[in-house]
Length: 346
Image (cartoon, rainbow, N blue to C red):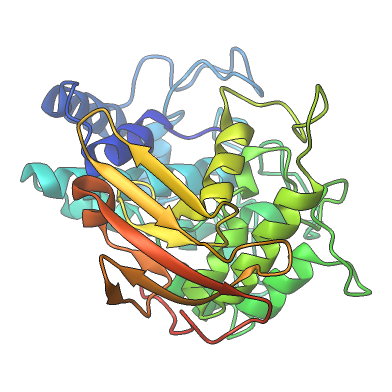
């Protein structure tokens, strides 16, 4: 929603094997943008929705290691911190592939921790003097952009294991509460600042986080619930503003049963394939096949998976699958299993 979205976008393109653009020139430009404050960085024009300055108040961000809510010139300081951390992580991944020195960017990829308040267990707006914004509740949007702390706290796909450790082992239970109401019923259609919002970008990756927490079957159940109840046909088939195809793309990934794991990389998380067979033929000649012959409304859960004829216990696919091609066969069933239950150290 804010941050530097070109960085994770192009870094992911590069990781997935896209070659028809100036990778070195783009990388150098984005690193310059991330390290040298531009002339509009202190400009509040267009805020809060379309702030003029890319990497706003960059010098302050680099000095504090977070974007202060009261000195950011951005839509929300905490949202800016989270998205910049993700962008810098992606740039570091890209730079490593290009042979660049990315040590500082790697470090900056972890600055999301500087706006995580362990006292409340959530991401929280922080002032320039280091104190926390008063009046916190998980539903607050102070410090965030079209979203709440309850949603943005999960925006750390680059370091799920560290985020889980800060939640003191309760990450799975907290995700459960994010997707269900107080009575245990599904709550994935939006409308509550404390629950999953399928209509906007900040939390769209969260159903897939279960894979990194050793509960892959919960990703399968949650994505199927969203596919079945949130999306439909006709003019109202999308749950919200498609934003350049974002919501449509989410559906396509969920229907295939795969989802990008981390911006700047090309591993794919495995969900619950909706079709018996999907063939993807990339323009560079790479051929991907996903087969799930027994999938149905009842058979939503992965029982086992093979990649190019070899059994695979992990709930994710290696980068080679999307860069060189391959075939996965997913055996589906009606009951959850312990397939893919080992936590992933991203």
